[in-house]
Image (tube, rainbow, N blue to C red; front, side, top):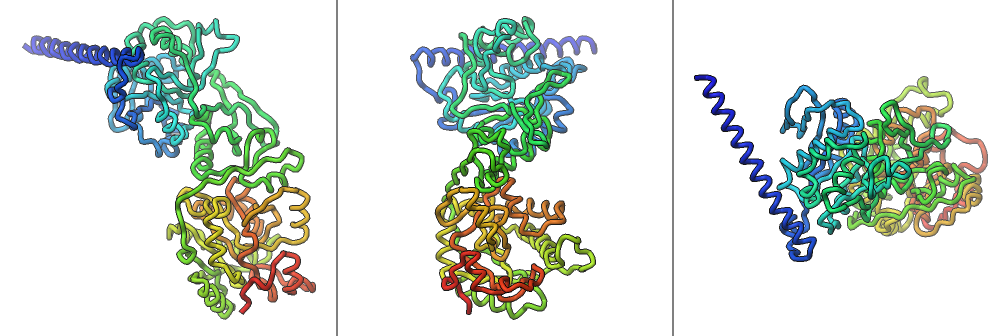
Length: 584
């Protein structure tokens, strides 16, 4: 009785599978007909293939179990968070008899060796899954290597502008001298990532198993390309209006050029540059990133728009956030231009900026005077009590005052992060505002180059409202010869002063990391550090705030010369026009 029941159940399941496959074949044939009619000009009804303006897209990542915990996890924590498309992960499990789907993790387990490289079987199995299980659900299918970074906004632009019915888009390669050995008759998309339209998949999809059993090489990308070319009317790889890029060159710690290498599995490898050339930021996909921290570093640069100081080896055709510091660090290299500033529709009323003055117990009178002066500009100033510290713990190369400021700023930025402040203006109690502070600052913030980066949610940077540049600083700027005009200028290493600085919240974690790891530098050194990392750090011209230098600074050691506390002489050195500032 039990055997009879099992036989009937197996027959029933077999009928269901045959019925499902038949329906898939019928539906695929109908879609293929529409593709043919569209290609021949007999139909132009694009709604058959996508919702108007909203293509349905799915991403597939063929990977390994180990990479699911490393590179793929890094992708999940970075670019995949921005992805609005469906996504599946394809891994191998040779003990399985059939492909298995795990809904909770969107993981497709394939009955193949997980460590297979190149992943020929995985690649064909992934496309077979998309053809047999998902062909009705999507307009475009995107394959992405686990060591590829996807610039999601740019990929969306690529897909939105695709007008081809038979699409096979990525990084085209001809195969070079190996073309004949690889069995190539046309360019193929290298395996870092590529886009295939439903119409193209409908044509080669029925023949995937034939292609898989008739390979001529061990390269997954060339084999899938041969399959597409053979069964999709000689379709070959093309590039999009936004390119895919390979990181083919990097630099080591000695600033020496290093190129692509191959590991024991013949996988391409490179130490992804900490300061990448501009072309990588302009690509929809970037490859290869072989370590998780490469993903995190590059993703932060992408989303914040950071353009770091570059090695001359990588600088050709690139731009940087600070060409002044670039020239100072690499004086023998050619001039690297400043990257264009991004515009914003956001606005900010100066009086809404959260403003704090660092408060010392014995300087309450000065603090009250400052609060009253800034109140005349409709800027409310709150007190932030300086940190308590022990002089005995001060590093020998820092004054007690400098060390105290570092401790205070560490506590301050922890507070600012907890309070989720978008921007914050930090004053020292000797700050003296410009007579037209509010109107000038409002104007400055409306300029894309000088202030727009302070307004964007994903903006990044610092605007110094004032600085003390000494003679050697002006000499350095003159020697560098970088001509800057407008209401702000880029800083150099000798642009000093933390007495009036506007910070964007995206700088808080980086400043805290610097304070925790770089213990022997005065706080002023954080500004060129941020600029080297690619944050815009600019100084208002003319200064909107200057320092009252007629008394010892709360953060500097006392001086015995005749210059430091002479306001007239200091104003001449720092190029302050004293009649423009409020001294009452």
